[in-house]
Length: 89
Image: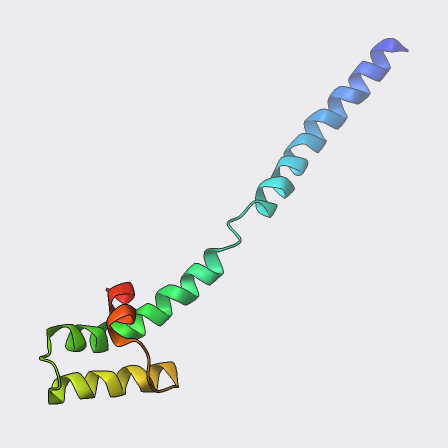
């Protein structure tokens, strides 16, 4: 009777442990990976405009075009272009 309990416990351990570990590991996936991907995509959209903004002279046509492009991407006017582009680049 004691051997039967040990065998039963061993079988449960051998079968149950991989399943338990598999479920635990799948639950431990990085929860921010989706948000990280969203931020990376948003940054990727802004790279070209921020490069134009960074290399343009103050109050130039290129700077205004870059600002307009950033505004279109963000969907709003008046962003802090310098701080935004420092973050993106």
